Image (cartoon, rainbow, N blue to C red):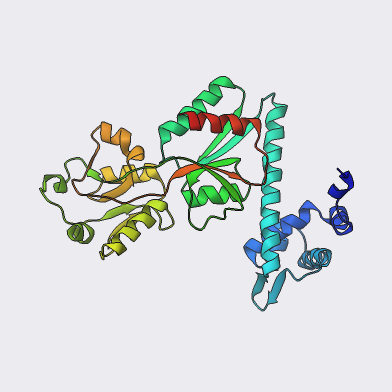
Length: 314
């Protein structure tokens, strides 16, 4: 094989010689702020110097990256591509620095995981516990959030892998997905709730007469509920408490007369202790499967491969 085919082109060499991380920082800040004055302040430089740097970046790539508007700066289509690249590159640098810092402390590796803890928490924590038992000096960082936030963290390079749900909007060319399982949604209330004394509960009265505790509209459980209600020609609940924290939801349900929709696995400990109880009403709301997500065009580390194997064995 001719190894010269893998050498960068003249244009790429030109970029490698000129492009700096400070340029990427400017793209990220200006993309977020859409204001040159605030971007210059964030980079501790004068506004004219920041404007010259942006012009330098645009000259490098030979295209307009931001539209200069009377009240700000709006990224062009090409600008959005470069902002995404800058975001990913800077997060990779941050992750590399964390790994190096841990290695200096005589650590043996680093793994950052983003997970929807509500989905099969026992499976995830069991895999983490096994990995930590096998590699006591491995530094493991776990971040819990909703599926859309976890996938966003993976896309931006903030985590090594994600345990989340696959959404229809997810780009197949960006991620590999290995399914782990699915969950059952349950409608629950606090113990001694008045609804538990009812022999028959109707959906219209439940939606109309009681407050609801739900996750954000972007969460798979919320989207599944809303689709279910639309197909049944039922209205959305009129009285909603919204939270993305499963812990907060479980605290709220004990202190209110609300109805809550959550996965059975997230509720299991509270059900076992009798703190919440399942309502006697049919809930056939399917959820998309959850599984392991990794960035498609990046090789897996040894820590990632071992952790994924433990997840799939559980």
